[in-house]
Length: 105
Image (cartoon, rainbow, N blue to C red; front, top):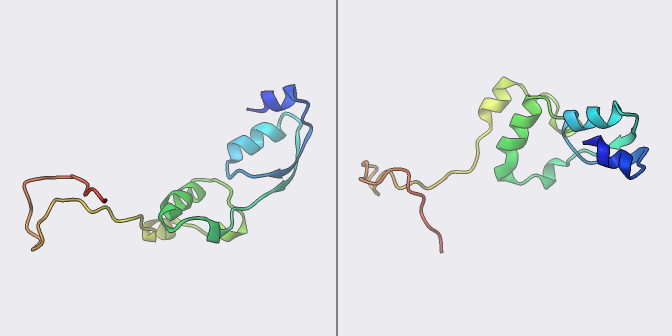
């Protein structure tokens, strides 16, 4: 990843906007200085993206102070959006169709 940055003559990045430690380490280990790692504010992460960001932080991505303390219990509590599968009728009885997503107009 740092090769194009070196090709362009980049020696310093003032504001690095990425949660990936892999990218950060690759850049820093080749001699490019990163001054500031910009955090992603919680209010900018949509509600239905909480599962993804929580899982990424749990597995080592850097999201700054806003996402510190995510452990296995916090990961288990996180819930994504509900999909309206047509696997039951209005009374809750199983229908003939399985895993068909409702189409919204």
